[in-house]
Amino acid sequence: MTEYNTKQYYAGQRSTHRRAVYKGIGLTDRDLDQPLIAVVNTFSEVCPGHFHLKNVVESVKNGIWQAGATPLEFSTISQCATQVLGLSGIRYDLPTRELIAMDIETIARLQLFDGIVIVTTCDKTIPGALLGASRLDLPTMIVPGGLMETGWVGGKEVSLADLDEKVFSGKIFSMEEELIKEWENNIIPGSGACPIMGTANTMQVLSEALGISMPFSSTKLAGSAAQLRLAKEAGNRIVELVEQNIKFSQIVTRASLANMIKSAMAIGAASNSILHMLALSHDMEYHDELNIDFIADTSRKIPCVLNTKPVGDYYLTELERSGGMPAVMSVISSELDTEQISVSGKTLSEICENGRLAKEEWENSEAASYRTVAAGPVIRSIEDPVMDNGGIIVLKGNLAESAVVRAFRHSKNQFAGSAKVYESQREAMAAVEAGEVKKGDAIVLRFMGPKGGPGMPDCFGVSGAVVGAGLEEDVAVITDGRFSGFAKGVGVCQITPEAASGGPLARVRNGDPIVIDTVKGLLQNEAPDFEDRIPAVCPERREKGILRIYFLIAGEAREGARL
Image 1 (cartoon, helix red, strand yellow):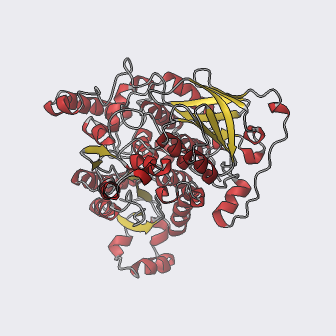
Image 2 (image 1 turned 90 degrees about the vertical axis):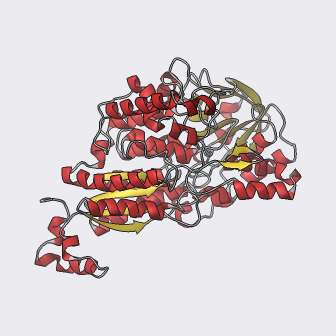
Image 3 (image 1 turned 90 degrees about the horizontal axis):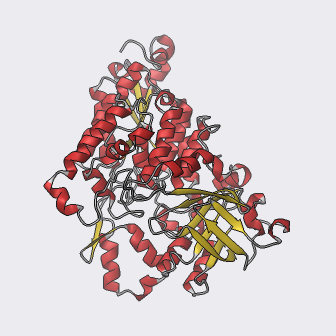
């Protein structure tokens, strides 16, 4: 390769000090006379989603060496928020997205690279990788960590979401110790993203839709030979992107981000993905067009065609067998800009065609005839979708300028109930467990937003308790916080403006009549004096570090809750 960005910094006498630093880790003149590729490793021992990534990273690096460039690995954080669901530590979950983005941006700017590959799996790390990469605008590749196999308990396939509901509902206390151990030992059989369409897998598959990951890569089983081969190909391909000087912004265009949003509807995406896509849109300065209103319109136009949990019937492992994300995009290809280019060098049109062929091959196989007969195809048609809408409903009304609902097939279009106001998750969860929350109640969980939390905590502890108590369709949870991709039930989240900024939730009182209408897109408090009330004041927050920063400057949910 004759020309590349770092050549000017590592050639000649004025570059001696820089070359000396890398010779200190064993690099040779030949290594320093070729492009330098950053490889960001999010491996950690605190998260099954990232525990296997050392081998994936090695495959990427081998591919880079093979293609004639020099890989340089550095690490950033990853976490599993399950450990702090319902606890105060959950407030740090979303801020990890910003820390990861800043980490990647900072190290890459300090160390001088020609391209970057980010190997990552879970729900804040992929968005953080996207935000960091958008600020660098280098040739970029994201390598998804892939899927976890399903767990098996009592002869049935299960996932961590099933156990979470038992814990937060209190049902765990009535289970025999032997059964509890069976769940503990078998619910997570290995590494990768939990095998339902939670936020982690939503962001993995959407990285393909965006074009920033290799086709068919997001649904490979974690640690599989197929995944390692694709990782090596990604290493090859990043060097070609450097040679061609194809930067992040040339892949992540307005049209490709619109494709990502449309694909989110087709898969029945987790509601957290809306925050992350809005944050990326703002960072890329596409938000004049690709905003919460675009998302609302898109959800009305693009149906959910993917029949996977928690919206549908199948685990994500069946999506891999059915042709992966390219197969899903092939079904809605008429709604996509198929001229967009992926990091693979292929157009989306070519990728969709490959997905269509893979889908047909699977559906015509003998294995498909007995694996998917009960619930029909894993990937349905636009004419016979899982849901007529995209599964993400944007609400407006006197309770919100915007709010987000994740719809399910069995979801009611309307809910009317009486408000029960809580200002901490622990208080709300205790009320559910004590039987104080009844059918027809609307739990209003406020001061959970970006500033109010601070950190915009995941409120799955509350929604999980409601579902576990058998009140899934009879009690609503309304919050300016977030919901996990595992969450089910009637849940309204990401309310803008948040209560801590004087938003409408701060004026809600116990007993207020609350109306949710997903057909009309309405979230309303029908108390006659509601508009005239003085807002409640956010409890004092004496935080330090990243939470202090969120308290001071975090943006609203409709802007991605970004710093």
